[in-house]
Length: 378
Image 1 (tube, rainbow, N blue to C red):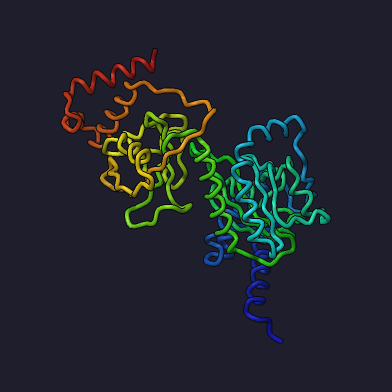
Image 2 (image 1 turned 30 degrees about the horizontal axis):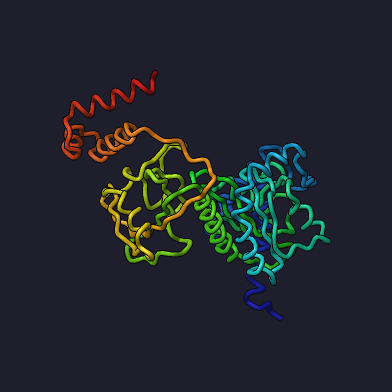
């Protein structure tokens, strides 16, 4: 009797995975030699397999699922307290969504060390118990190719099924993973959904990516702020997890942003740690945004022009956290310098054109930039 279509596809998938393992791990060839069209979108799996092989790992080596030392674990728990707190509500919702699928959720830090786990975890199954312990190292260097190591290396959502994992000991797992980015744009960890001897559920990649956005938004809103701007393109509905989030202190300095905001507003993509003022982002006065949030019971969306000429819809909301140390103040002269540099960049290096746009002389631009360079070199 022929297999049903879905079962046949699942059987073929496992056959393709097994063939891929032989091509890379036994024969030393590239996947493109054998799977030119079928595997073009899984090159990251081969990159991970090859990193494991180059580091001296072999597929049949035993996997220890080692815990990090107790003193290091204490530091990891302290360093990731905010991440765990931001993720808890999301993990609880995930637990309900995947309750009947034999999958559960794992949260790690940026090094692949587990900091929390939630969902229908069968602790009597050693394969589940060992990977859900807080402090277990699930990085690629420790347990080979997994959604955890791949998401942290590739910085994108991934899906792995059974033999796509590197070690033979881990081919019982199927997992989806997505990296987590903090309010400053750095990767702070990842979210993983894992099943054991479970049916393939590639749609979990969408679920884990969506859940990762919720955690990132919670981390952003946890930053001290006096105003949060929800951003989206005109015509898009404001108010869900797809919005860009921009947190500002009372003087208009950016205290945090989520990935969506950084994609919409290119000026937020500054070197990590560099302060950004909202006057560098929006081509209009920023103070009225605070007035709208302060005096309107239900502020309506407004359109904000960017210096690039594009426009965004924005919904201002008052906010804040008491008892949190405020970010360091940045001198007004640095705001001035930032605006001058942006004008010169927008003019493609034409200082005269930038001077006309700013309403100052070309000599003033050179003098201001020279003063900044002298202070930096002092």
